[in-house]
Image 1 (cartoon, helix red, strand yellow):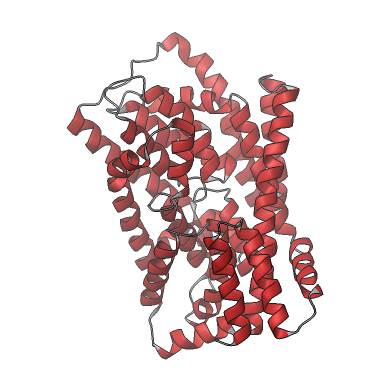
Image 2 (cartoon, rainbow, N blue to C red):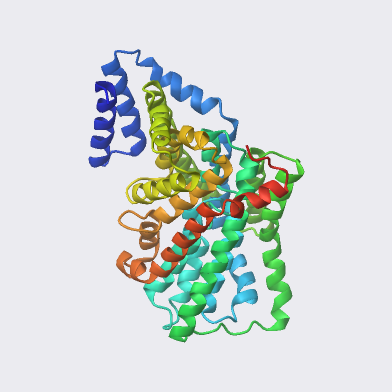
Length: 432
């Protein structure tokens, strides 16, 4: 490692230890690299500008953020909850099962794990905590685990970012997440069933048949969003980026016009919250473009590929190594940083071993979702604690069956790529 690269890494680590926002840390480390290399500092503006303004797919990120915030501000979460209570509420541990099904549906609208936990998850926790059979830790653990479905079932903000750095097809990535996402949901429901039977958790009271039409009608319009989005993308009516705009408009019309659940004050709050969230992501993107420039100039990705080649790893051994790396890094780093800094370094090695980029992308995103729910810095744990006051220790104690289940599924997807690739290939995707 030469002096310039050491300066970059040193400043980046120092910024993180000082708790500087990660986007600023990356930009400052980029400045340090250019100073040591005695290169024009204007390269920072050039790299950031080219990266941000030459990427059409990047427009999808703030639009999906806006759509998720609109739905959480309106009454969409409550309507979906009532709809799912009819379907699975009579199962043992009904409220926990409802939360998982709600997450499946909400995943088809938001593309964000945090939005899932903060919206439908909060509704479900409040309902569970009204009943003594559901402990605080269990309620929080179910919501945290089910929120990981958000970026796996399409649409997905992390998959959009991965497509940006890898050049993989966004449409194929979205399709690749469908089967793993539904497998996650089924396995979570199985875990809840066994826990509920063991603890004799209650079934929900049956909903009177006379109330069904009203509840189903209330939930029908929100359920139409995944159909419109995915149907539009795969019929060719609009691109995945344009689908984000359709999602934002769909959510706005539902919450503001149809349900009249969004006041002007609430709408302004949604705009400000979406702006803040998008600004954070954009700042991290800006810093990552500078870091990627430095790593590419120093030949780090190529060196990584040569190192992997020298080890004579098979595809599966390489992917298992990647899993281990991301599971460790996920303890300490944000999803955006992992996607924008570390994934580009691994892509040349993946291509050298002929790893399919769609399979690799879904695998990476699943790794990062697992990172959101395990200590010491699982972001979903902290978000749920902040919203509900449930101690992180209690959620961790109750969450280990879900964590084990996700790890088993991760290994299965690693060993059997067709779990990811079957649906995209059925829809015409050609594996390279």
